[in-house]
Image (cartoon, rainbow, N blue to C red):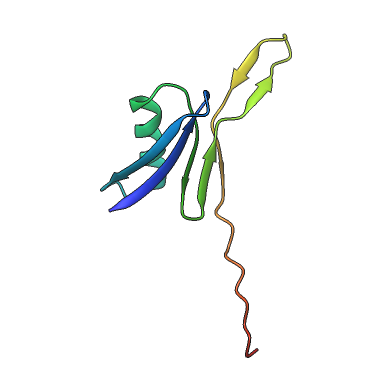
Length: 78
């Protein structure tokens, strides 16, 4: 079982506990299930819906996914 923390455009959200192991699948599910999802996190994985200004002045949103960043390990004996 995995947990996914999500946030909506109204700064609301929650945690979804489910059997979806694939992060991208969970993001798709959350965006379909809840209105206005703008951010999803699970462990080191992160997805955010950016807002960008189009050339004609209209606001458009496109999904963006960042690669998980490796955890920094402190080796006290190295």
